[in-house]
Image (cartoon, rainbow, N blue to C red; front, side):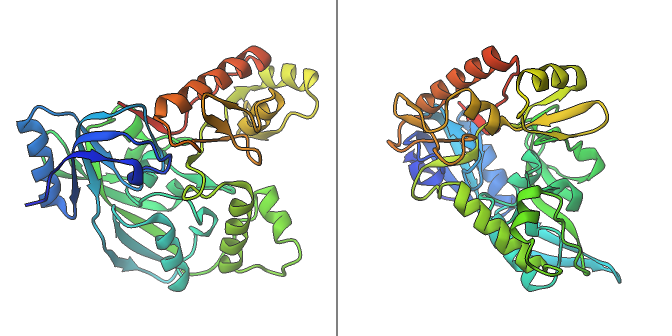
Length: 338
């Protein structure tokens, strides 16, 4: 029987360091404990919140319900052939530690996703991505527990309906499933992805960089640009890079010749949200105790460890400012509760 803790302060369990208090908190280590936790919430008629590493969530205020932290552990090599391995990983595993494990075992593909905070189970929901790589390209399948029935269901890569920082678990199946494990297809032969300009530049002097070298370069870039949540509370990128059509890009490029953009396909372009926020004059600015990071305008910080509504108030002002200046809407990347 898992231990249910009342009036639980979540400040150490979210990287924004919001001092929100949950009515109840429980850590679960397997499907059986997860089902018991969900049954507890139903019996008390409480809303519930699934928590992994707490790195992609903004707690607006206290949470009037049960917070369930997934602590399941385990990695299993379930199949392999001449070119690939299939590695099944429990949802509660730490993401960066998984990346380190794959490199140590010569399983390749995740190195560009080094040092992303959070848990394995959260990675598919967000379709985490960085430095030219998205996790969807390495997910073979995943298992998830249907909250209503308690039945474990398998999802193929296709049925996850991955998109840019998106999946079916943020859309039509939002809050209906709990991801319990993810199976990755990883390469046995190294093929480093250096498509991202800053990464390619960082490794320009390295002849045929190894996946380990790519990982180390990614870590160095992230540490130089992004504040450590342990020192400066944050959730990483606070806004998605907006995608616009060719007509919009043409108009913006005429007004702002230096606008930073990346082609998505023939008809769409991704704008750098950090550039928009910086150009709108927000980098290094603060409102109500929340601040825009001085080295990376995409990161909002909570140095005074206030409730999440203070950070969201700053985010809203930034959204209004960017919309007024560029006619572009910025969408939040982290999830907001309650």
